[in-house]
Image (cartoon, rainbow, N blue to C red; front, side):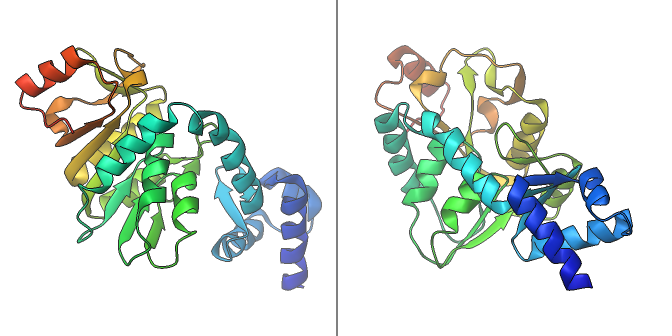
Length: 252
């Protein structure tokens, strides 16, 4: 009976791409909400679904969204992002856990990492999916609610998970940067996660392509005082680079 129920839930989610608890309750009216939640936990352990606040997504659907959402961003400023990713790879010490933030530049960086034994932590489904193509690294995806817009985990569960881990090096991305406004992004919960990661990390490396400069987003998550290295591309504004270096910021 249990296997039949799990199969019904699996087939429904794979067919529709996702399911809410209410939809599964309609599908299985004689099954309690608590049992459905346990069943989704089991399917998540089998890597069939990813649970979110109101239900679950099919792993296959998440993968499809990953491809669709990143095609446009991934094809913009490609040479600059690859340049930054290559520079960043030279700064990495694989002796401790590495956190990799979400973003197209950080995804290029993840692609360039060797297929060796090391630990990577991320709240980005895109980054985790990319690293799982390799055989040797240990990949830890932070739990929490999944943001449909950026395919990252957010919320109180993600924050609690962060409290329990050590981060040697954090590879961070930003949507905007200015000398006055610091590093910023467009989503409050993502900003909170970024701030928490930076507070935990022993070393912080910020990836910043020139298209993000003099761009202020609503939520500031850190400033230059908390950054160890700022990795930029060849088109980075010379005057701003000189100003940063005058403040003893390590610009790579």
